Length: 395
Image 1 (cartoon, rainbow, N blue to C red):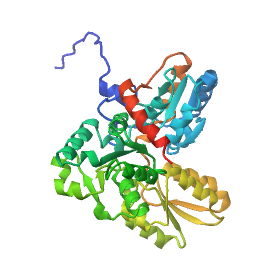
Image 2 (spheres, rainbow, N blue to C red):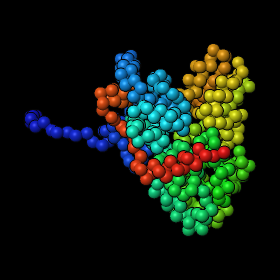
Image 3 (tube, one colour):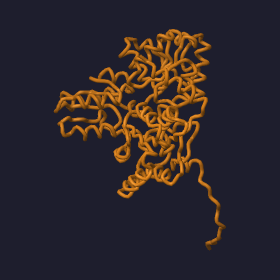
Image 4 (cartoon, rainbow, N blue to C red):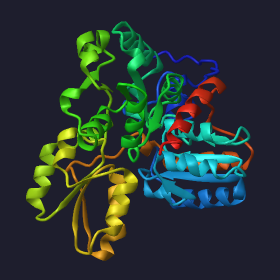
């Protein structure tokens, strides 16, 4: 016999994980990389499009929406400007009258915008679980421990940290505090030239591939000049002698999207498409970059395709949303543009910013409720801004 009992209503509160999946809480210890649990929200519908338009219209000049190149088309449609991470942060700083900066990107990008914008401006990230797997690969505690290892090896005074823009505010602050600078994929060589004028060695954070490719491809170093520091091994997996002999100490980090392209991908596309031009991002592995015809940042990729002759063929090694958008854009010019890898690869965390989250953020702001604000504390901001200013002052 089944016994049925009547329970009293429970006061159930959402757990931190549930709030994280909704994009309304953050994990302060992580940038929330590709291991984010949960599914993406349901696909957008026409009602959401109209709701986004209405909320944005109601906010008017009070809101400025930034859209990273890797965002999906339904989000890019509502962006006031598009670009890479640093361009967008600077665009935000150039709009001091905008009360709200809605950053359709990932967490470290919103942090950079908060650092560069005024204290009276509020930066909003539509989904706090939109992070960066690369930024996750270098925590403040790990980098501090690395610096202790360099100190024990007797070389810390010779080392200048150079951190990629794709890093957390904490890592940017560490860089500023230790006399280093930030770089983008466009100015990495200039940043390294400057760093080697200040010291004898560089600690490059957090993307080993951009550091290696810039050092070897653009500056004439050898692979033997580079060592990889693994934060998950004692002393980074390196001896004091190896650290003393190295010019480039590369952090063991990588982009989960660009890291999947392989030499086989390049060879396969050349076999399938005669006369194809292979164009890749410098976050790709060294062997991929060495086999490519052209290498450059996201902005470089766009400009190269704009300048490409009609009828040319291109295989692009970067995030799929951008490649697909460029293929559609230049189809009328008979430019054949394909993804370098045969396996589809979106940036999983960038894609967490979708129309449902954007609508929720805009509608909340429209009724005076600030959600998912990204704030960098004053001390971190001051040192991170110092590192960014050193980059801006590069010749």
